[in-house]
Length: 330
Ligand SMILES: C[S@@+](CC[C@H](N)C(=O)[O-])C[C@H]1O[C@@H](n2cnc3c(N)ncnc32)[C@H](O)[C@@H]1O
Image (cartoon, rainbow, N blue to C red):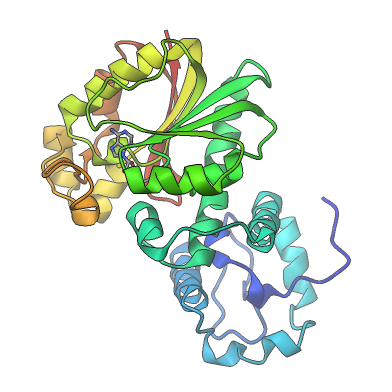
């Protein structure tokens, strides 16, 4: 890996995009000014520490010891810079570059309420950065399954373009179409994101798009909100909309997400929990429509295979929370 001669100010990094993958090294400290340091082999402690750091950075309140960092660009301990390289965090470093580039691009941002509907954040930084980070999680798993560069992408549930704002510039896709049930979000995309088609669709299929139009689909956190019968109706519709051999990347709340919410026991008995209401789209989606749905891996494998082959299933692939399911249209 090429080392950047200009030293990165570690305290300025978006820590949420870091995943500590190392074991057994003596110590990791993100910055000389941050206390405490964590033993690197205690991943739980490192993780908890980085999460609290991330929270303070995202809310614009650096932890007290870090306030002087911007005037001390050399504060990164060289040993740690080397460690980061050695730990094969190259991907995450590219992520960081991409997050910064996206922020610097200065593209129009949706109103905070629109951002909140898709990502539960009103922060420009988190909205932009999380889109980059999620694509870094999805695309390396999706792209190897695609036949070539001329892919026609459907971003199912595009919202106000958290992923679209990056995907429309991605040369690996010949065309980009985003669709969502949220008319206001779709209208925002239409007005502000050049290079894609955007369309408002009903909560129940069908949609006004032709058969077999797409060779790739991304559905980020859409199935996570649908009750079981509706999931199946949408899978059938996605089958209609995709060409034979098309590949889809859909995320779900799987076993790990259920465990985080204390639902693991229920999930292992029931396979799917789809009655929990989610109020985020109150007044936008039909009453009672929007859920917080959890489904076990075995449920997904049993019920999603009628028209699609499950090529890959990555538990906790998305910010260590949602699972990513890669499906090929039969
Ligand atoms: C959690 S948000 C994720 C949005 C976007 N994929 C992203 O990553 O920022 C879920 C989105 O799915 C949309 N949605 C819900 N049901 C849908 C459906 N049947 N078809 C398309 N979009 C849907 C919602 O309006 C919302 O924008």
